[in-house]
Length: 307
Image 1: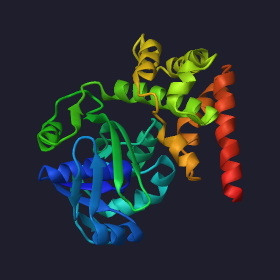
Image 2: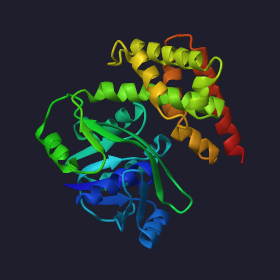
Image 3: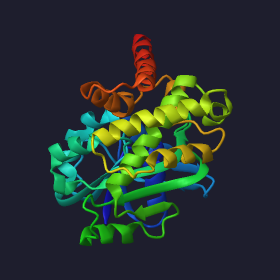
Image 4: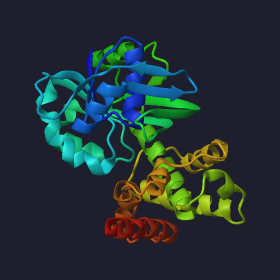
């Protein structure tokens, strides 16, 4: 299969690099600056699972590369609208679009643009970042990518995709309940990013602090209540499962949103906490912790835009 990875940042670069390492035909759609950087230095990954250094195939918007079998979208949520038109020439009749964005709102955006039949479900768990030279640093044991048909069916195309991913040095896994997996990840990452950006702290000190566990439990309760009001396909024990995951992650674990704030970058506040907050307001649901956390992020955005 021919795979196009949109973006060669920490997420797309990492999983795309693992596929190249396994002999898969991968091309990266990148901006001109990143293209030049990759041509000069190669795609470099420093990982606890083994380092990679390859010279990848790259294209920029407007290049004629023909349709791809799979388009793996690994942009930030606030970048998605800007790349939709760039993707159009690469979408053929049988192209699968596999998004790895956090949250849920992007699914309707992609379906409205390309048609529901082109979009499959996906999510990932990986703690990775780019250093100042463009190298991808991946420092923890978790490096999982989950994918599947929204119907849960083992279609011919999803079986071929599973076979393509097989053997790569990362946790590529086919799910038969991808929508539930995405909602569970959404609740987890909204909580992790919300509390770490509010406190400007990794998760470990939050767990230890007086009131820290109460903050986590309270925030999880609010977002799960909203998800259930939306009739999201979450499990009855999703609140307990989310809290348990937050107890188990490494002491120094930071959310990617927190790392973006530390670098002065834009954040995905509207796509994550904002989506839940909008639904809460419309449903006249009380969510004081969510409101506080979302306000904190919006204050950061206002301050960031002034600089």
